[in-house]
Length: 284
Image (cartoon, rainbow, N blue to C red; front, side, top):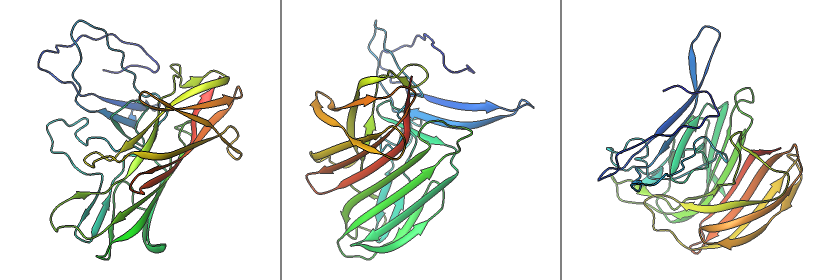
């Protein structure tokens, strides 16, 4: 069903013994009536309570990397690892443009994608391939840093125009023929934005969660810092407090700005992520 954004819609579903998984596709139509997909977001199968209205938001910022159950949008499929090691081969296929909903995965049109990998500070390889990359590794245990930068065209998108993620983790040879997931994590944001992904000026709370790779036993997060930029160049540390569902970062944002967010998280095993989302959301 085609709808113009933004829109609201009320739908009714049978829920007894049923879980629902959804996919939303954003596309643009040219002068000849031809459509091009610009964004795709999937959700994991979800059971909704009977007799209640459950609000569900789609295409809400902040768009960024996610590592959910890969069966999102394809519930009958087998779960797959987004970043896994098979023997001495590392495969990387991180969805970089999930919307702000929980347990979502998302894809978008990109101008470029650059992925690099280092081992104990020494470069292993780099790739400009889109979507998936594969690296050959030495067998012994070592500390790896996997870095990915994606950019999407400004003529199609105002938000999340560039995303940089650097994951630090330890790895060693795994059994051949088995996809062993690697302990990556991402930082996810769920600010209360309006239907045009805008926030009010002034003091504003941004809920934050740290998402571990689906299929990996999560370790406790021992450190989380978040910074914001309102001009794209100057960064300001934000106060971060614990909440029932993760953390809350407190901003004080000027009207008319585009807010970029930079986070650094470390877990109890020493795995880390440094993640920067340029133009995460706009301010009225």
